[in-house]
Length: 126
Image: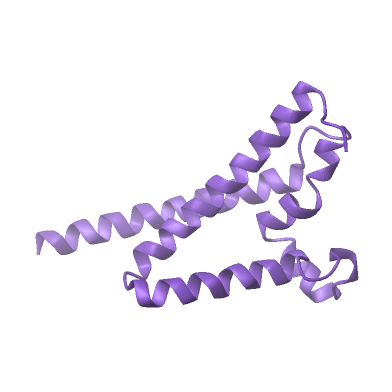
């Protein structure tokens, strides 16, 4: 496989980092909701393998049933694993559906984090 030109390489890394930011924000929300480390570790592993299942890690994504594919379309990691090759192979600079979904996830999760923060501040005052 050839390394793409600089602009496609930068585009690829920016998209990967944006996906990572969304997953980190979701992970932060889960960590705030579940404080017990004995619970959060198995829960995180379950989430990881569910993401793998819906994104086509264990089987080629094209061979997945339609229902599982439709769920996978709402997981940003699916685009990272299956669609970002079109960036690397110099067909696109970005995936519009990925950017929309990722932005929505970051925004909604950020709102939830803000709400949890405000609630926790109120509980500390009481």
